[in-house]
Amino acid sequence: MDNLKTEVRSPQDISIVRPQMRNEDFKMRGRQMQPARLRAINKGLLTLHTLELMAQTIYRFQITSEACEL
Image (tube, rainbow, N blue to C red):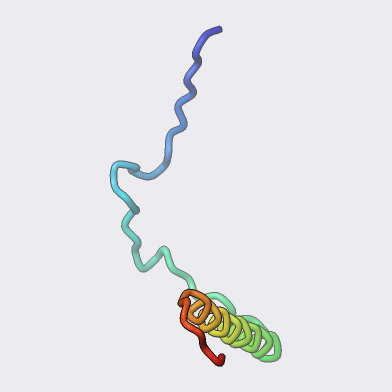
């Protein structure tokens, strides 16, 4: 069985860890969205953040072997 190697070429230089980012690589999104949609997205992000903080607190108390009332 022949060992066939297929070479995949990347459009970017892979000798560096991450290609350089330029200002034109960024674009603002959501400017054309309705205000109600943006509020819903913001509410969802705040909920997700709150849940992540709660999980972090739970993990902090679970990682110790000390007896705790919480």
